[in-house]
Image (tube, rainbow, N blue to C red; front, side, top):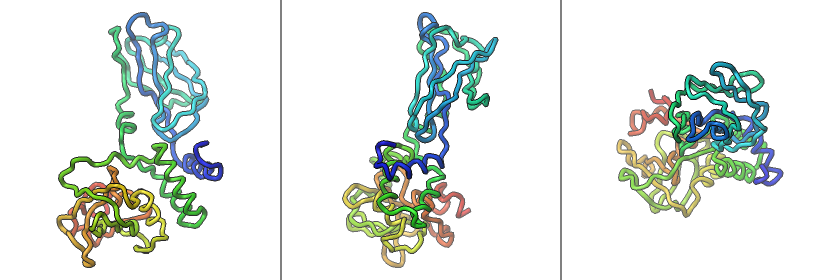
Length: 296
């Protein structure tokens, strides 16, 4: 939290406490090369938000249960902590390992079989799905957005906190699209609001997504759009083949602010946009997953 000014640290803390921090077992080396003592290890990883973890223990369960206390650790999202065992601890066959907090099992591995002395180790497949460039907008972010919508925090506090959450990967909008032939590449030249943006000389209206008081540059959706799609940086758009222009002669297209997620689904993720069902059957994107079933 010290990365933020003191007055904004409390806002980030509000966001973090809304979210789930989740410590889990990521990797287990039960049978390393050479002797086991001093070379067996496992890693824990935080698949949630920045948090401090305490009162955790590791339990090995084959033959008899043994517990090993984990020191208090502070981990960022997708940051890991490695534990190396001084003594031979993990059996090579039929071993399951538990992560326990206050006598409650938080995570347990499947039965691990590691009969060869090598550098192969068990890896939790769920972690890769969560942590490796996987776009992620926490469900609780819409609650935080309401603080701003209701006037409880000002614009600087809102944008600085959102930028902090982006920098810390608590919000992950994904990697930019490159060499995608279905997209038009350009530069943001004007930002109107949460569903209207100019790229080069093209005035673009995002399909399907409505926002409150469209065109009002003071609304939260407009403030967020200016933060994510400022004038100058590159952006991409995907024209709606079923509705190329609207009645105001704006190009209808999904807009990507150099991110994997497009601006429409970002607005929905922040609780600042919704699907206008009237247009579902008239848009190429009406039945896409990102509409969250609104058109079905």
